[in-house]
Amino acid sequence: MDKRTSDKPLDVAIAGAGIAGAALGVALKQTLGGAFSVAVFDPSLGRAPARDDRVVAIAGGAKRLFEAIGVWERMSEVQPIRAMEITDSKLHDAVRQTYLEFEEDEESEPFAHMVENRALIEALREAAEEAELELIASGIEDYSADESFAHFGAGGSRYRARLLAAADGAQSKLRALAKIQTIARGYDQSGIVATIGHAREHNGKAIQHFLPSGSFAILPLTGKRSSIVWTEGSAEARRIVALPPNEFLAELELRFGLQLGELEVLSPARAYPLQISIARSFIAERLALVGDAAHVIHPLAGQGLNMGLRDVAALAECIADNARLGLDPGDSQVLSRYQRWRRADTVAMGLATDSLNRLFSNESTALKYLRDLGLGLVDRAPGLKKFFAREAAGLTGDVPKLLRGEFI
Ligand SMILES: Cc1cc2nc3c(=O)[nH]c(=O)nc-3n(C[C@H](O)[C@H](O)[C@H](O)COP(=O)(O)OP(=O)(O)OC[C@H]3O[C@@H](n4cnc5c(N)ncnc54)[C@H](O)[C@@H]3O)c2cc1C
Image (cartoon, rainbow, N blue to C red; front, side):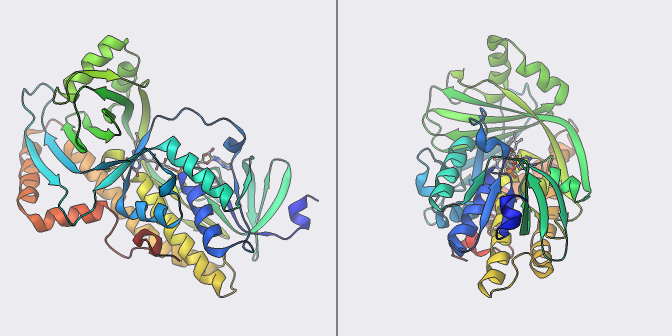
C-alpha cells in the first residue's frame, strides 16, 4: 500500500499544472486553508519548463481572479491593451480599411492585458509554493470512482481524492479514461505564433486584420514588441514557418503592414493546429473537466484560456461553498452545479468563435459586404460596442465571485 492510500485521502487532486490547473490549486488552498488537502500532479513539474513563446490576452475578469489569489502582483511584464482596431481586406489590398475601433475611455479599465504564458506559469508556481500546495511531478495514469472517492495512480503510487479535477489539456487522458466524448472538428487551419520587434511604439493598440485565409492579430507586448497570431490553412502554415528568415519576413510584412516601422522576428515562429472541441459532459463520477480538457476553441477572439479561468472560478466557488459547510467537496451536487454553470456558456462562446471564423475566413464578396455592414453598424452604436467589450472581458452573465475580484 502506498503512503496516500494508507494516509488521509486528498480533498481535491488536480491533474495538470498548466495555467488552469495551477490557478485552481492556488485558489482552493488560499480559500480553504491548511486543513483542506489539495495536490497537483503533472509530469512536467519535474522538468525544466519547455520553451513557450505563446502569449495570452487576459480579460478583465481573469485579471481580477489573478489579483484575488495574489498572482497578478508577481507579474512584472504586463502590457495593457488600450485600443483595438479591426480591418477586413484582401491580402494585396493597398489600404486596409478600418471597420471597428475601440478606444479605452477614462472610466473603463483596459480591454485586456497581454502576458507571456511562461511568466504566468512562473508566477503561479511561486504562489503555489507559498500556499503550500502539494506539487507531485508525475502524470495521472488511471482513474476509477466509487460513491466516496476518485481512485488513481501516479508515479507508481495509488491515491484517492474526494474530487479529481482534470486540467490536463486538450488531449486530456482523464477525459478519455472517464469515457467522455467530445464534439470536435479540426479547422485545417494553424495559428502561427511569433514575437516581433518593431521600430515604432504600438501605444497599447491591438490590431486584428481579417484576411481571406484567416485572422492576423497583432497583440502589443512590453517595449517595442508585439506577438502575432497568424491563421493560415495548415499546409500553408507549415510552408511559412519553414521559410528562410528573409522570406518569412517578406510574408510577414505583407500582412503586418508598415505602420510600426521596420520589423524584426525575435522568436522562432511555431504553428499550432486549430480545432473546436467541446466535451459532451464536463463531469463524471468524482471528476470535473477544467480548461482545455473541457473545451478548445479558435483563438481569433483570444478567449480559450479566459474560458478556462471561468471554469476555475466557478468550480472553486462550488467546492468552497460545500467545504465550508463541512460537506463533501466532490459530491454530485457540487458537480451538477459546476456543469450547469459552465457548459451552456462554453457552447455559446464556442459557436460564436466558430461562426466568426467561417464568416471571415473566405473570399466571398457578398459575405464581405454583409460583415463590413455589420462591423460598421457596431462601430456607430456605442451601446453595442460597450456590450461587446464587456462580453470579451467576461463580465456578462452569471459571473463567479473570483472573476468579480471577490473572495469565495
Ligand atoms: C495560437 C494560440 C493562441 C491563443 N491565444 C489565447 C489568448 O489570447 N487568450 C486566451 O484566453 N487563450 C488563448 N489560447 C488558448 C490557451 O493557450 C489555452 O486555452 C491554455 O493554454 C490552456 O491551458 P490549460 O491549463 O487548460 O491546458 P495546458 O496548458 O495544455 O496544460 C495542461 C497540463 O496538463 C499536464 N498533463 C497532461 N497529461 C497529464 C496527466 N495525465 N496527468 C497530469 N498532468 C498532465 C501537461 O503537462 C500540462 O502542463 C491560445 C491558443 C493557441 C493555440
